[in-house]
Length: 114
Length: 115
Image 1: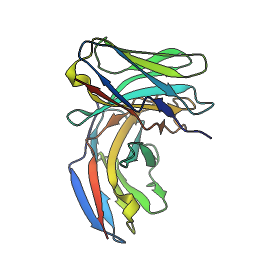
Image 2: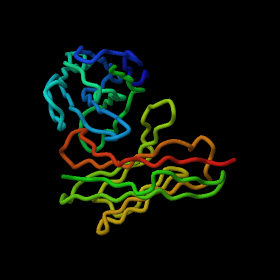
Image 3: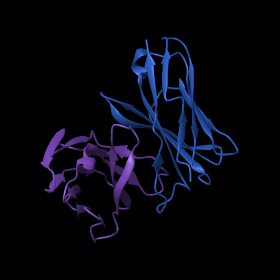
């Protein structure tokens, strides 16, 4: 079974631009979560989608948004990029967000903002 | 808000020996999950072991085991017979029950394994 696939693996953008990252969950998984990883702030939860609905949201500004499609694939968008948005963005999926369903992570997208 | 603290930024262990990574957390919840994740240079987070707070028995997975002290809010990871492939960043994480997949992570411990 294919794992969680994130594209692209690397991305370089300029301050002020916007970016879209993509995540394809494991087949059959309906929950998709996004995390931001930086050296300074560590791993922080961005948001979670389940059946095309945002179920949980972390403490990030409105410039960070996401969505989930009917096939469970998810995208996250960051508008008006800032230097501090440079990070590894990790996507994770699970069958559904309940107690017995482990979280599977992708390899991440490394975003660099210049 | 929940917090997770890993007080050891770096640890090293000799191959074949045992090492323990520390984790403490703060929560007012009684029903939650705790996890240890491994992140090798490939960047993919891999679940090592998990513990349900309602279970008193410590979880074990082959060479990996935990010491879960609920009253002390402590959740340490013991790696026995360390192997070179165990070298990675290790993250402790907390998830409240009914919180979907919203995890709170500790700052991580870099484990080095010496041959």
